[in-house]
Image (cartoon, rainbow, N blue to C red; front, top):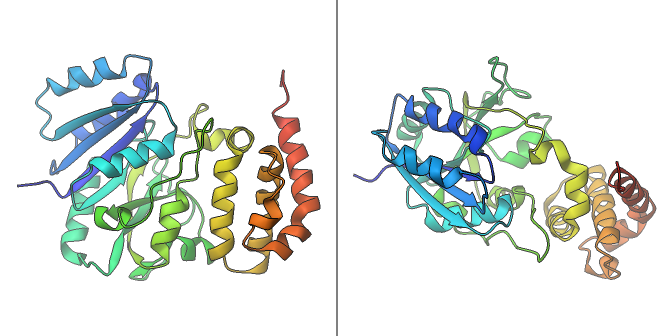
Length: 295
């Protein structure tokens, strides 16, 4: 019988820490899942490590796919091409799952399965057991954007129906860039579905020095087209003047970095973008300063 859940892990030169994810999956109290590893062009011993794990009696299927290096979002694109289970969840290469995480997800879904929802939103936690950000509201469902709009905080774990994720366009890929914010597909799904709430941690998160969360200003500098793209999407769907204005400020800064002179013409919110231009230019200078050579 086919597994219900795919745990997918995009990874790039993380052989030194990927074993923590693998070992946590071996400890799962329910092994009814597939582990899909998307190797984003690693040059370390990731493949050899995975080959050694494939020889073990793991109790679950391991699939390995290698691709040229293109960034996290391209790893997600590749994963969605390959996943054939009802549900999927991304566990990053520097994170791992509590021993009962898969059992909790599958048990919750069995009791609450409903195609009117895009999937499940659950909690992330630190190694000391502390919940990241706030717990989820005591209600049946929410959208991801609605949760944050209403004061929610901290990273959350998203378990999506594969059919839903594949309804929406793949993450765009821009030549010379390796980052597009992952909330693109999540925001599109939010327009059509809510997520069922499971107030339980299913992922242990470690924010590493070489992770994208720690290097956001550098990401802005190196991937301006990807961020400009996502800012325009947010302009269409964000609620509230201040949130839209902040989005415009970031859009302007990314447009300056990418030397896009048509940014006002291309903006879905042209008037607001004009108002945001001085602030966006200031942010552009700050990003340049933080990414100056020798820093």
